[in-house]
Image (tube, rainbow, N blue to C red; front, side, top):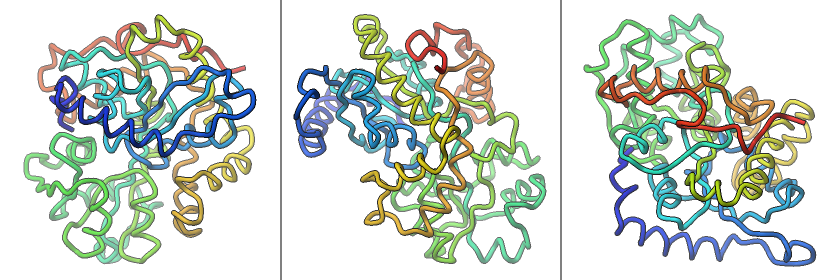
Length: 356
């Protein structure tokens, strides 16, 4: 993930134009009481099910119930999402926590106010032929599955430094392998499933539904679903988080509170009423039957539901895991520059509060 563009004026100007056009296309109609609600823009990095809590909150109108009208759009990646917030073209960015670490190292003014995952949601997907030959399944001992990663050929990743690359370095190191020997092909997010199904790469890491698409077609297999929380280092871990400029949330605490609590309610529904959450998610425009068939949706839901938190508040212990992962994966190259995990540095519960 390239963070230089976060502080780049040309990138921000281009992004403003893009998002302005996109928001016009996705903005909800202004009718009834909604006309009187204040409006904010929320961008998600990409349209994957790691953001299921956001989608459920939109589908069930939790934002309006909390007193705010939201324009929801997709930025096309973590870097442009963060750049949009820094450049003030959107109010909030929902993206991965390791992206915040990178952004803060670059000096970008950002703070996390809510977490909508409690585990990394990436699925480590391997070509079905390789998995079948190894006789491994998702239920095989984790050590055996990790060991297979040390024996694979080309690994697909979105871009140099992205979490889709760094997660393999972390897992291979944990398996006792040498991350420096890994071979990556940087293909962008949308191209990864097709590259695996065409035998161009052996494996890739992505949140649902990309990996599940390859499995449904019999070409790939999600060998390690990190969302299941099998690894203590990546469990109780704020992965996809809601970020904003500190000056914006300080000046607009009611808006920050409304957005943070609405998304938290979306995640909480996966625990209090899983079937209602599943139905709302299925009805959302990003995951309805026109976008995703039943086999892919059902498998994706089964692998993502355990990553939904009961509420969106965070802890210093969870953020220390983000920092530890960033150090182990090489995201933070100089340990002396690692930020503190204490509240008030990278994150705050001031706006999300505690669950009702």
